[in-house]
Image 1 (cartoon, rainbow, N blue to C red):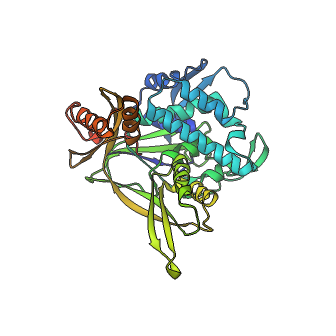
Image 2 (cartoon, rainbow, N blue to C red):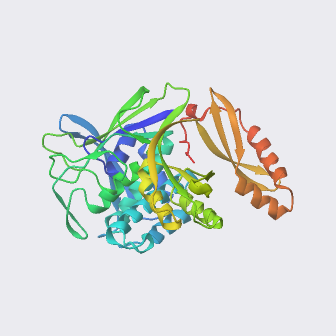
Image 3 (cartoon, rainbow, N blue to C red):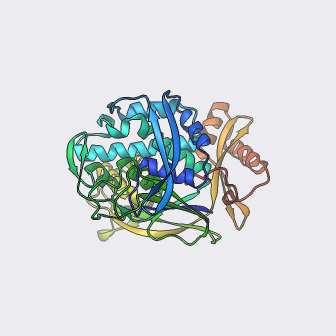
Length: 406
């Protein structure tokens, strides 16, 4: 498994992420091509080698024709992303990042995500940062992202809503479940865009995971700080373990007073909020009352968001949580063509051998209904098509595309 470890010893921003990816070998022309897929004119990139303190790194500049900070809504940004011919994993990650930004701002301002006015993060340069990061991570074949504790800096920052303490309220809301610390540097080291990208895509946080290091790269910040190298370090390597490993937050609630029909919409809301998996377990409670244990696996950075969904859409008065390590198989999602239409299929590997071939149930059901055939027919066709693809190989060996983690 190819791992990217972001060491945020001097914070993180969107352009620092782009700089680290280019410094790690991503061609600037490929990055520009990814951003050009947005179909938004007037965005261009340039890169230069700069010195920050005693070290050098790559500084990426995003140039746009846009003046000021237009007040786009989440729907405006999603419309741009959904209309663009981006690879599905890139679009999926970019939408998730902007939704997290909207949810964080909504919580701060006491409104809903759809009513949030994006200020700085709604500008074209922020859109380029987000899409460029999602595209570049895929281009480098980084299947797992790990992130260090994030240096936030200190002091105050001037934002669209006035002077704010560091971290700004929106950034602070994005840090739920994420290790971070303040420092004596009197400026904002971690921007909302940079924090949103890493905390949305990261699989775990903390010390550098065990890996065979291939490359160490540095993305430069705009300023040259006194006494500190303003750089984001990206360490790329291969995991020596046969299995991948990450951390998830396990959320649980025991419910005994809710209409069972309400569990299905609750599960849908949890998946929409980013839950990795949701399960229901029947239990017998005190006084022999039947109940249900709701269990949701979520990324640690999204634990607060999913806990709020459980509290809002169920009758429980509390949600338990703990962090758990899990072993995961390298996997990929491919789209195959059957006589009845296209089906997404998940493929996973163990010890270099293809071990799981799982067609997407919803795709099979939709095609079966449209063609008036048993769902098993479509399922078997999709599975055969996935097995007949090019010689199966562990996606960790393929450095041309990152593997999504559904």
